Image 1 (cartoon, rainbow, N blue to C red):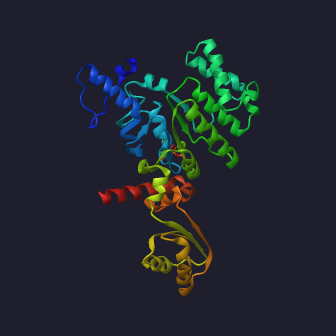
Image 2 (image 1 turned 90 degrees about the horizontal axis):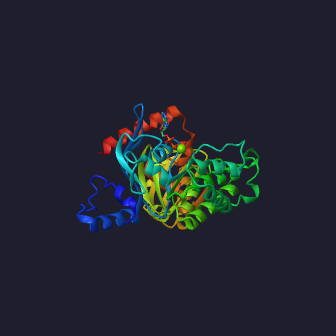
Image 3 (image 1 turned 90 degrees about the vertical axis):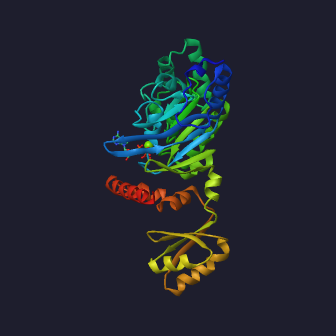
Length: 370
Ligand SMILES: Nc1ncnc2c1ncn2[C@@H]1O[C@H](COP(=O)(O)OP(=O)(O)OP(=O)(O)O)[C@@H](O)[C@H]1O
Ligand SMILES: [Mg+2]
């Protein structure tokens, strides 16, 4: 039996796990946990001076999957990654990575993970190869193993040709690829990617997606990534947890999340917004949901193409001028909108003070719902 089994911890209150009775059951338990969930959190909470950054959050990440945490700025994504990678202490709850308790077995957790930080962390005065070498030395890899692995990961992210160039001469996309390669150097079981494509242009972003998919398959590594790009979560992830103000608000495959809205999305951009239009539209039997931001009315409807003329007639009848109409299948942003009443993009525009106010409001609402 693998020696790791000895370190396995049983999360409190998990009723799916029977008590251990003898060696045989230990083996079964080992297989069950090890095979199924590689990252687990149980009511994980982390505060910063009274602000709850991660709020009693529970997730389970399957071995081998690409799991996404999607949420706006300040949602708590980086804080969660930092807790899971032992960089931050957990205030309440528990977390397990590769079967190891994040609080009690931090060194075993660190050996199990690779981490690509949200902020750039390469030494730009070193070459690509030297950056990888340095990381491998920190992990105590032998000279032969280092050499072999450096070449392997460089190949994976197609940077062999630039390996001997200083990182300061790399493009943004190349730097990100090198950081991903570095995270893989010590054969981690789980790779945490904190905003892997932040600030990159759409073409480079798609390029990085290809590498992430490839390494997930070739290296057989589970990936937990954070993003506030819904296209990224949609395109890359097997399952997505939408996170807002430190809490999971929805968790499923991108397909199921979008289907859960149960309809097409019609967007009307109007010149002269009127509350009257929103109220009247809500009365239409085929309208399942109506939300308004600025001068954009977002409706969830059945058979969008058929009902648009009726909606336009209604707007016309109350003298609301419609500038443009669009019809689309739901996106993950629409899922976020439907759960929070805000859009991820709108949320990004909020400054710190506004966010604090919003946070207070949401907490009041949640309390009210209990
Ligand atoms: N070291 C810290 N001290 C105080 N507050 C912090 C600290 N780190 C994070 N926070 C706060 O915790 C909340 C969550 O921040 P976090 O960085 O986890 O969000 P995020 O989802 O990663 O956002 P982004 O998309 O901008 O990276 C924010 O309100 C942030 O201001
Ligand atoms: Mg972050």
